[in-house]
Amino acid sequence: MMKKAAIILMAVVFLFSLSNPVFAADTDNHTVTVTVAAINEVAITGGAITLTIDTATAGGEPTNATDATCTLDWTTNELTKKITVETTVGVPPQNFTLQVQATGVTGGTSGGLLTLTHAAAAQDFVTGVSQTIGDCTLSYTASATAAQGTGTDTHTVVYTITNG
Image 1 (cartoon, rainbow, N blue to C red):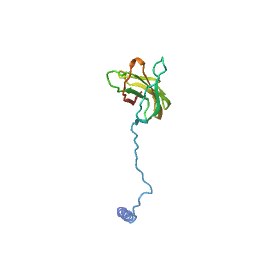
Image 2 (tube, rainbow, N blue to C red; image 1 turned 180 degrees about the vertical axis):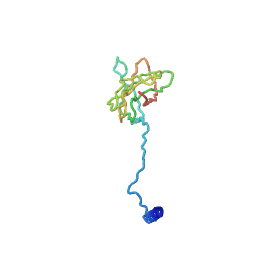
Image 3 (cartoon, rainbow, N blue to C red; image 1 turned 45 degrees about the horizontal axis):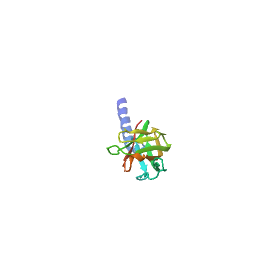
Image 4 (cartoon, rainbow, N blue to C red; image 1 turned 60 degrees about the vertical axis):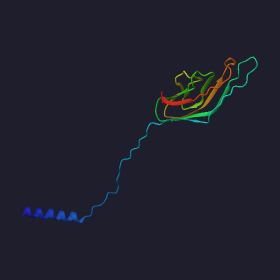
């Protein structure tokens, strides 16, 4: 009799479970992964620059030509970066001196007044660049001596954000 009662009870429970509808959960969730890649960008705002040395005081060397109309902007989300500068002025060696300095720097430290030559390796232009948006004014100075005569040097000045 006990066995029969147990079977009947199991059958009733089974039938009762079939009569109850299955409900969806009130909430659910899933995983969303956000990945941020390394970002290291530099850009020059402004255009080509022409520095013309065309004056001098009698008895003195020609007057330097200067320009500070362009800016360099950068963005990096990495640590320990720097911005280097170099020229790809052609060989034979350039005739005249070209210098550049980062002024009004935000998001780093100026490397000071740098002389750009065809023989120089990339030089540290702005250091201490880490996880920042920054900018600076590109301050160029061209100089020549009377003994150097006349002519034209054409520089392609390259700025690169790299490991510091």
